[in-house]
Image 1 (cartoon, rainbow, N blue to C red):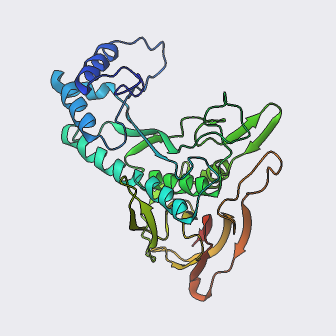
Image 2: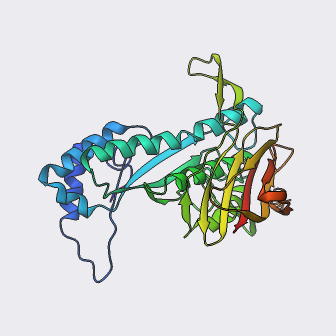
Image 3: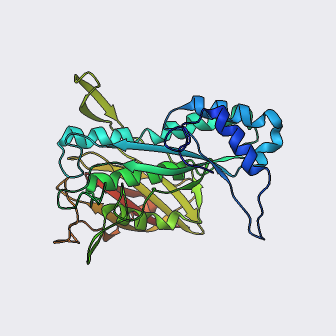
Length: 336
């Protein structure tokens, strides 16, 4: 109901928006169609917006929560350097990926604040705008605002966000990029009669087996990645973040494990254990390149595509897998 009501959607205060939400949710004709109303939630880490909205909304009673299906959360990690998708150095590669990882803490923080009022957590989170945000590619007309094909860096950002949503499946009821075509972290890139699948599309395709499966808890242990970040005062500071992370789900005798290795140069070898099960077979699907700027273009629409490979299981059902540098990987694991 509304969009970004804290800004372009009306410049409301949380209290003003809560009053408007109550007003329009009070009675709506459904004509036999169930309506799932979504509240216009915070801008990134503004937990004050969340707290003040729910406090005001429930002044008329906790039953007001029954008129809300989801609470929208928007967070873009932006861009780096020259603010375009294709030009960045190794530190900027890491910086944007690390900034994208903020999604994990945002979900946790807003969920905790929502629980202060909605103790039963009837309302779930809807992350309906997320990803990187660059200027359009140089070969696109000005009217194609924020239209870019994206690179391997954007693919890793898609992977880590989808893994984050999967790990928080109890909290996030819906998650989607804002646009499908030609704008801001989209899955398809077009111009006139030209068309290509972006790296983001390939990651979404790789992660499809998670849909409808049951999320399971995962623990990743790996060396951290270090890099140099430029802060708001233009000073270089040392920073680091995880070196391997992902998520998993199970459906019948199949476990789907997806993971992101952000290290631009080093592979991550890991032993994978599944509690209470024996691994009998594994297949891998990998999106990676030795060039961290790899992308698809109208001239070369298959410059960056996933590849499939078989993986050997060691004696006793042991699985040791080497995750390639700068990669998004899906392991399809058969268990007994």
